[in-house]
Image (cartoon, one colour):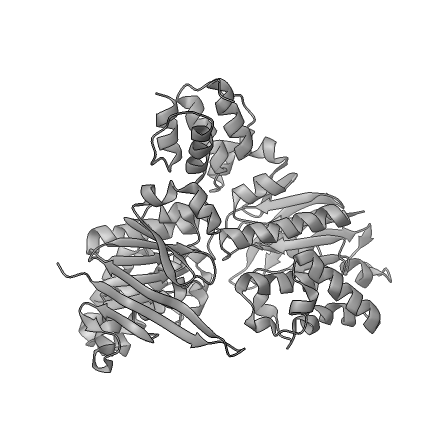
Length: 277
Length: 285
């Protein structure tokens, strides 16, 4: 099966305020499969957000290619198809909400792309149901919690029926409960609607729940694999200014002291199982 | 040397259909030299509470004292008292406005009426404290810096006011783990060198456990708990969960290990302590 998104030597160069040439992305090669939940982690300034903006042609490559469902983002005739294939959710829910009533906010994108009126209502209802916000359809968005607002923003994207949603630190401004709501929503949409997720985050415990993790540094992919493969490499993560999960760090310390433990421990449960046998 | 709230109530939009009680009968004293973490889920009243500490909000009922001066009274030194409390809001880099790092940090001290020589001295010291080299950064535009550096400029602007009490509302939100660590290293240095009070609003139980010596838990507009990290995280786990808060990862891990039959002692809160305890029961060194 053709990957939904394919990056071929994707490069993004720009000139900064002091006239230096900066390579935000350097010859990135990556395939994102249909239905995959891919987490992207890396320190501030590593190129994560630049990468995200290439996936629906908000930015265009200065070298190499970005193919979305086979369409080259540099080909302007595909622009609207690409934007409809890949939706985006950003960090601050307040900046993404435009209407005074939740259901109108979710309908906004549909009206914009000219969906017939009779079709809008069922699509809004389905989208709100998908993010568990049906009960709030007639509420005012500004009186909702951060997690609820962010779910309304996700519903606005889901209503457009994209095949992929790119989320750029969607939980950075939320409390622990809000963060759990967003994680549960992502997994539900992946499971029930087979939506592909590219999920940028600084929270390692969120990335641990993805199917695959890529780690970026200075515009390049420096590590990738299943969460257990990536997060058990404690020392490497630390040199990249990232933190390994507690269980992986403790396991590494214990191994260092001579205890033999499985290599791929990343959760507290796995560590407990290994130690309490 | 303290900030004191006495039976403070606060009601938003009183007398309208949107009326909401944000604080109910909150009494507490924060002394200089304390590092207090304020935790609670969204809407629990954390931000409303800390905005009372420097008179940004005035209580609907009850009283606020800074150094025993009633902020609602008529004492001539009320303004001076309020200036002892510095506030770093969430995402403070959004409030940066000046053309150079120097000008941005100098804004507060100048407003306070310091001489230019004093202003320069304060800016220099504040930049040292947040770990920004004066020679390299003072003349630069703050808008060319990274997110973590911009945040340090914003914190320096408050530090330059030499507050006795420093309120930080989620200072690490949106930063990568390396930048988080750097910010907290600077905050701890400031706390230890100047012996001020730090009031840290955070959603991270790990930060609260690691840095604070006192934790205030807010829930439904009231103070639910007030104690040391050890008391709160080790002895009130169920109440925390009921207030929809997490417990630190370390405490969760120890709980699982003890359930699994590993004979670990109670009272383990930090990662090195957990590792040492496991090594001990396994006879490792």
